Length: 242
Image 1 (cartoon, rainbow, N blue to C red):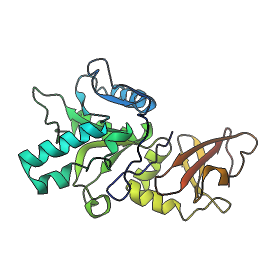
Image 2 (image 1 turned 30 degrees about the vertical axis):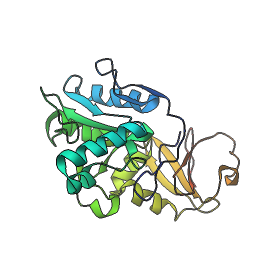
Image 3 (image 1 turned 120 degrees about the horizontal axis):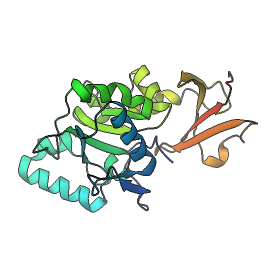
Image 4 (image 1 turned 135 degrees about the vertical axis):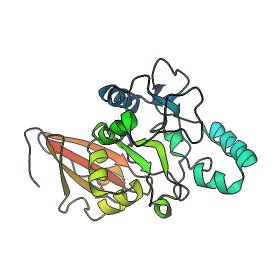
């Protein structure tokens, strides 16, 4: 699964089949997320005691749905607001099935900007989310990098160990992918210690066929980055150093 795929105005999503989608939870059957992301989101919410208090506001969107949201927001809020808070159709992470907007349960939840405070159960979710592979996608102070205003409600599934690594490094997805280009396949990998394992991360500038064959006992994940490259994540049970 391409959990590190970058989708923004400069890197639109290529047309293709919808991801493997499931409802986020039984209470919100109309809000969908990629299967693994949905499972880990539910596990994280449960771990912080947030069931019933943290609710999904928006998950996967089709191209047509994103277009409708763009058009409606433009008509109601104007161009400046729309460009700050709504990605153009084809350039929205919501179309990957890996992004979720969360809100604190209330009689009315703003679909575009749900209230998700920094404290309480929402704060607990923020702190634990990276261990479940989720990161705050559009943090304050990074608007020039992401092209989107600060969205404290928008979380992106990037997988393990990347959620913890990105948070520890203080990097957005754009910055993280650029950072990993310093560690090309065949050279010294970026070694990240997390979740009781030692992960080796490398960047491959070419197609999947350019990746080295797996070594004995190796576990690996490969994700396209939507920039022409791939991120190789490797680890060995029992540990191994680069």
